[in-house]
Length: 100
Image 1: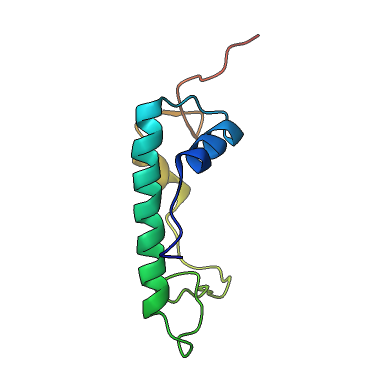
Image 2: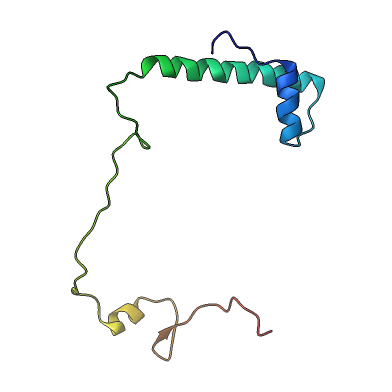
């Protein structure tokens, strides 16, 4: 992969496929940037060895589950007492929809 260079034609072709208008100067810039990206990817490929399993995250992820059990909670009056506005034992919130 290190021997393969990104040509101006490659960049122009990719830009056409992506429906991007690019100038001649941008083609040169993008070709150099894409070549650099490919070199970095190739360098990462050289580091990885066969004894390292593929992974989707750099930190192992597991689902955290807990039993669905009823527990202690605040009484309705205690909750409503902390609300900024209450009307008829309910939270009063600003109207977000028109009546139409």
